[in-house]
Length: 130
Image (cartoon, rainbow, N blue to C red; front, side):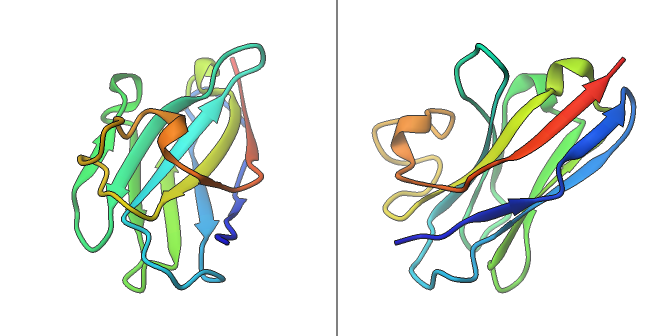
């Protein structure tokens, strides 16, 4: 069982920055694709960014390109999401997720599809005020 633990959320004003972390060190199995998702109140969960294991191959939803950066430490035990130039529409609960079978750009479902990820953290809240 994968245990993922997010941290780093908070409240900021528009234009500010936050760095989210996801601790996956409790789990030793290969994590081929790691992703960040968010869910605003009353909306569906959406993919924000994803990264392949052992590479710099990253993926982003259009709305965050140029503002957010996904990365992982060398041991790949911690996943990060650096969020700059935050906007009120970035508000939501942010989750990290792990796919143990396929790289982000492989498999039947796209990296942005929450249903391809069987392993999730509890989430961390991000609130951006105007």
